[in-house]
Length: 448
Image 1: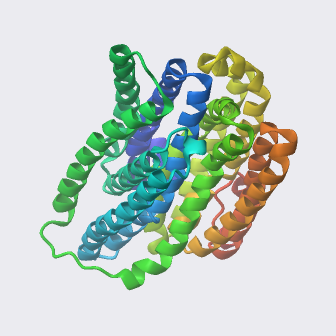
Image 2: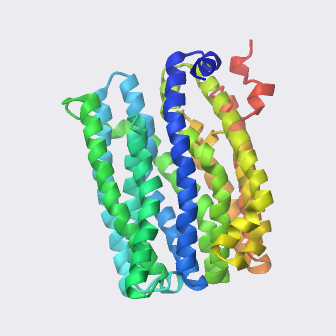
Image 3: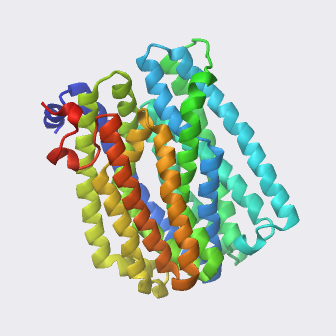
């Protein structure tokens, strides 16, 4: 298998990097998807329909806020760590790792302080179900931000197992188990209590990732003195941070919109459909997280042909696997939703509309990773802002009139707008196409 991939990519070393960590990532992500589903089903079975709705709203709100908190540093780790090593500047690689953690700590403290004030004043009680919900959500968000940063840094350092296993495997097992124990001993289960169990377990696992990232950094760059260059980092980080927030909003905020406009119970069924559809993004995430550092290194080294080969390999793998997932959801999606609650089976149509968005995204390939690992981070931010602004406006206008289906349709339409624009810019400005279109119509820079 490695030899065939090496012939396709034109490099034994590149094939080994993609195949080794790629297989590990895929295996872990498949296990993670299964465990994530079991985790969410377990919480749904423990909670009432209303509490599960609050749990979904708090979870997705925390994910969006974590994207604000991490200020693009997770993407910066995958971009700057390999780029600085490629440029022979290990002191800058080490400096970014250290400086990013310091900035993340400052932002996290500020976010939690805002959550504390919101809880004391009672803001968000209606959305989260309890007065202290805002504080709980911001603490959860800060931990998710740290976990995302360490996962990205460890991926850039080729520590794939440590990057993925703590949160994608262990957290998804231990969080519902701890909530089950609370239910067993107290006889009570609430949405806020479920979130608290998630927070406590994640805190322990994130600390373990911190320790591994510290040791990997010292092993790779040694005792070289860390050097900072915020002047060089700041320019790319600002659009990376903005785009990260917008991407999280595209992926998560529709549950919050549905919960706010239609109520917690409606949000619960939408949350189940959204998380079921998100299983289709599994291969995109696994492929992108491995390939992102390789994309950055190839682009910085001026190896456009190598970059296109990476994208072509990923586009086929992502499209085939995702389309198979689409067929599976079409056949058994209703039964999967019924695992959460038998009443959710009626949301199968909603599930398929959301799944269609992931299928469209898969056909376009890893456009988001490619734009952020090259020179198009500013364009990426502009496209995300344009497409999501339109999606949110549609949702706010249509959801009160047509219900949750309107939110799903708007989200899927956003994928269409985003990917068409992204592919056109990548072909024009980078000379690389991440989509299946590259097999039929190669970018001009690669034509003979």
